Length: 159
Image 1 (tube, rainbow, N blue to C red):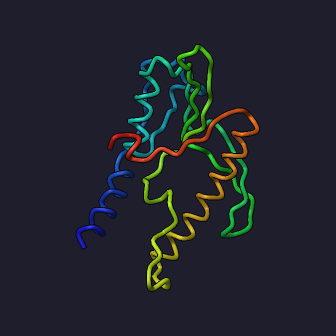
Image 2: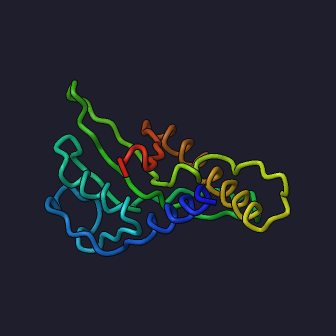
Image 3: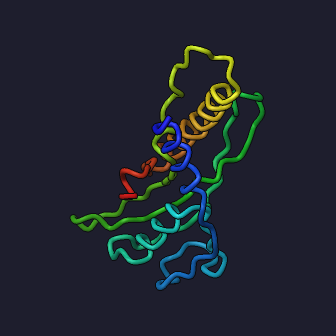
């Protein structure tokens, strides 16, 4: 019971904070720096990191559109990954990344419940299938453009 409660509270806390971010270094931002919206405390933390880290020379939030086909309805959709960053590496070269921020439990297939008829299990399966389609499309998109695709979780963000 306590495990279930902790997992549910974690998801609620992840979504508990949203607002408008005002960068300290607006010239680093790709897009309009007056309309940067964060949809979670984790996104807000990552925005502060991008804004304040010298090796990140450019960043953006939901600035890219990646087409994908959703396996749950068979239709074409548009995926807006959470972040884009351009990083100056130690050797002086540059690398670009598309980044998605998700709770770790949403990055893995749902736990194989004994009773697969529960609505929560079915919903988790559909959500994972949709996310996996988005991430596969993002990996292809990035590969074609010599970019990396990363999924950051609470472990990466230290939350």
